[in-house]
Image (cartoon, rainbow, N blue to C red; front, side):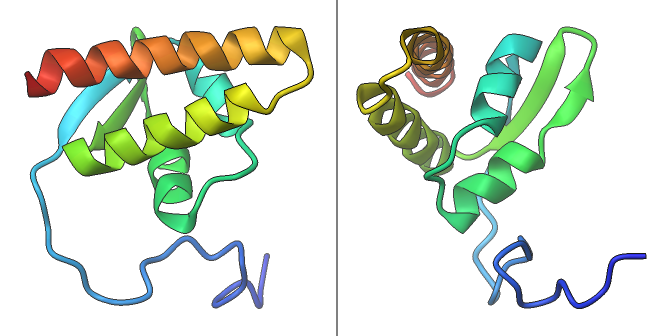
Length: 108
């Protein structure tokens, strides 16, 4: 059993109450989900979003609001722009394109 994780940097529970907003389900491929899980510079809200993905027959379901999705897209873009490994940069660019297209489809 794992203990003493509460209030550690690995504790992804919300620190205080927040206003509930409308959430949409964004379906991403397994490759995109894996690229998102490899991100190293996420804030706690985006970590909660990424590691809260659920299995879906077509890959993974990301439950997100418009603001959270835009914030995640920003983190993906920032990490892709500073990635020296070309293969990883290509995976992050592909994830960026998938998320951007999903945002355009959902919120336009």
